[in-house]
Image (cartoon, rainbow, N blue to C red):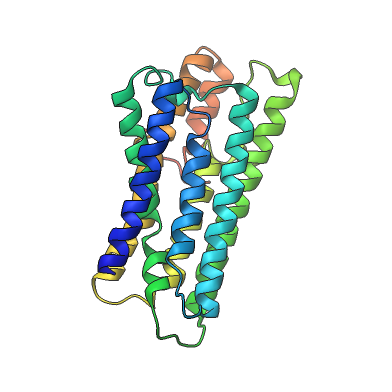
Length: 259
């Protein structure tokens, strides 16, 4: 992929750097997630085969577009309603910490897109196989799982009768973070769908996509922060402690007692 990857990485980081400048100047994170989502869309679009895309490439790109636009608009609507993102409480007034967040977003975008970028580079196509359909099926399952989980939590929070309560219904009955489980499945699906078109080291580097997303959400920006916030808010609630003990942190029906 060579020079093409370098160009896409440059565009990616340039967008994040510009976002950081504006974010640091106005001390706001309101457009952070939307910028990340739009970067997914732009890099996917720029990586297309200009001489014409195969059906496989078109479907793969469509999956990225749909996922990114849905998540970006959802998160932008949420932050405009609530006014802030608690993840930024300790970095909003620190340009250096904000820079780290924006750089990490750029890294997240480019690594997560690797299977799609490799696929879009291909000039030789072959007939669709079971691998394509299974991968896209996993993506669809994950996408819908994430959308439904987000919708259920938003509906729960919008109900004034639930103020001061935690959600343990719907998909949240089976996982404490079902939206993240769905997102991980979606990116694993896109890797799986493209895997038989990748050769050599492309397969290994492409696998970084779902692995990186899983690690990021499980150990850095997602679950640890939300679990800490939940314990602070509901730690004295015996019902929450029971929910936390019995409900898997991520994968439905598979519990890891120490997490």
